[in-house]
Length: 639
Image 1 (cartoon, one colour):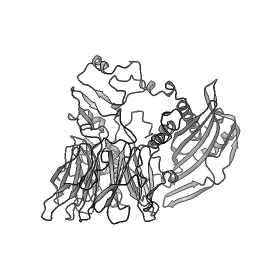
Image 2 (cartoon, rainbow, N blue to C red):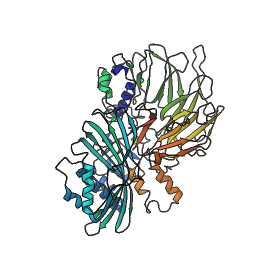
Image 3 (cartoon, one colour):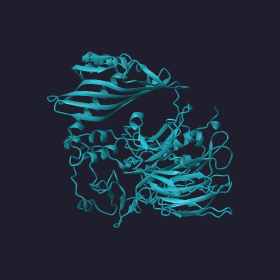
Image 4 (spheres, helix red, strand yellow):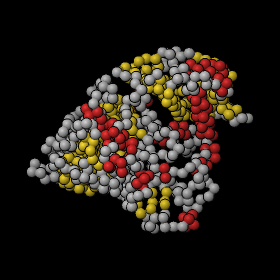
């Protein structure tokens, strides 16, 4: 298929550009052995006071100079023995997997036997009876029915047999990788039980193969050697995906499409870390690398174009797609190379004249511009709370034009970097008194009603209070999506919030009521995005919410020692915070049912924008999860 005719070309480029913008911010991290800086507060908030001496800073917050980051993160010093053992478990299983994917002739049976007990028991790591659940074009997904028998083994030789059998697929494979996440760690004096998520992938005979499994293990602790020996290992879930092509399903084509643009070379190839050292005005330069983008045909030539938001003092970019598949930077010519830090953007027809207009959420305002054929003209700038994050649009009042909802994260004067009263620079971090599972002290979102007249006058009115969508409206919002979830003909709104409850505003003739609690979709976690789609093809729109998955959080919240003073119900709230993404099936009359675990869609790592999309054109909605975060040079890929 010619590059210029690919229906997913611009989507791929958009995803790649998001990755470029989220490059490492290594300067915010130190090596494990480097002493903790004296300006890191105990509540998680850091202050870099540029006009104070080291002695003056220590008077504000004295800390021992011999405390290192590694020591601060050492669970053995805090009495968390289950975490110490969890680290040992991960190292032992990693050794087993290293042996499993070893090249032919390198399988070390002696090393395997040394890791387990004489009484070891387990079952085969790759069950033989796999069912085909997806078969389309080059893609095949096979899954094990856990009710079907799996061959059992015993003794040290049994573990060797298990690994040898599973290793045959990987013996001659290339580009082999694996990952282990220990998600449960329960202990007593001599016995330890763990649950772990295991992933392997590589290139096998020219095909990309990926395996996902859940292993349950028990361990015997030897107090003399302080070593954990594997006593049992059972596979409780297994899935294998194969892609019959050495080329991945998606290929990075950003350079081939954008390389001839000066802005690509001088601006987009550099990450946040680079610009932090070169931009003078950093008041609203939050070190996240999370500006938004939009894809639409702005010049009506039948080809989708990209509008890319940027951090403060860097011009936003508009790339127009050409017939040969390349894209040309037309930001300046189209009068949309705004220098204000931009978070969210929409390319949609606000004035109903047949072309795509522009809405950009900058810090503290919403910029609206009309499409004049060969450029954008700013028509209105609307005031919002400072820390805007995203935009969404729908005709909520059924008057024939599109209205805009603006999401806001932090409250005013706390977004990103702000000057403090003493002349230093304060970096926004954690808050000592924040209720992480139910925060309600953030910025305010806004709903703007489209009242554009036929004569060309643009007018959007703030109707946040008038429509009652102001209820529960001080949460840390990251995204919102519209859908008629009750099939009454108008658009309802779901808002994904960080640090606690989400909102589901039901639209009742232009007035909104938050029914998230009634419909069981509050999903009290760290929500970054939300999307509607009919994943089960029952004609009702279901909901997928992107949160954060933490293997450590899953382990620790199961321990008796975790917040011993809390009631079980309160502990469950913290446990939910670490569980990951959520999928809710829509029952219309009965609300939503949480099907996240049975659908195996929770573990998306640190998730952001996540969408439904039929990637293999088989008529079923798949889910695309964007994930990651600011990481150090020693990035493990865990996020």
